[in-house]
Amino acid sequence: MSSYTIRASRPDEWRAQRALRLEALKDPVAALAFVNTHDTEAAFDDDVWQLRAGTQSFIAEDEAGERVANVAVLVESGEEFDIPQTHLVGVYVRPEFRGGGLAAELLGAAIAWSWELPERVRRVRLWVHEDNHRAQAFYKRLGFVSTGRTMAFPLDPSQTEYEMELERP
Image (cartoon, rainbow, N blue to C red; front, side, top):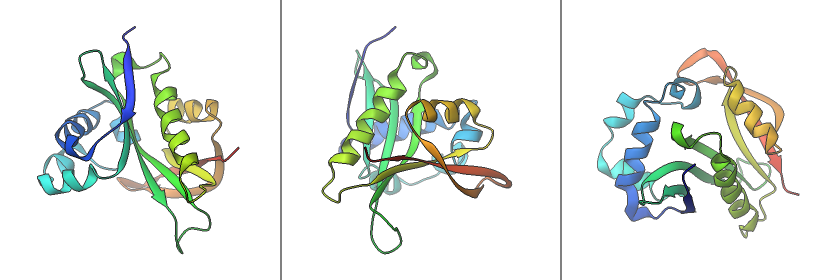
C-alpha cells in the first residue's frame, strides 16, 4: 500500500486538477459517477478550469507529489437552500489507491472542513447514481443516509440519482 498526504488544493494548481479530472472521466465507472463526459470537459478552455480550481477541493498526493484522489466541496447557502450545507462533487480515487481507506480519509477532510465553516453548516450532501451500489454502500458506511429526494441523471434522464446526506453531529 502506498502512502499519501491529504490537503486542500490551491487555485494555482488548476492544471493538475484538470489532469486528474480528465483521468477520472476515462475511468470505467465514470458513466455512473460523473454527470459529464471526458470529451465535453476536455474541450473546456483554460479559463473554465481556472474558475473550477477556485472551488474548495481536497486532494491526496502520493510520495512523489502526484495527485491520486480528489473531492470538491460546494458551499450552498442563501435563499435557494433551506439550511446552510455543503455539496460533495467530483469524488475520485485512482484504482490502485482504492480499498485502503483513502476515500474515507479524503471525504473526512471535506466533511471536517464543512463543519468548521462560519455559516454553521448543518448537513453535507451528495448525489449518487441508482446503479452505483459500491458508492452507495461506501457513503452509508460514512454515515450518509438517503433523503428520499431523487433527480434524473443528467447524462440519461431515464436513469435516477439519489440524494444522500450527513447531518451535523
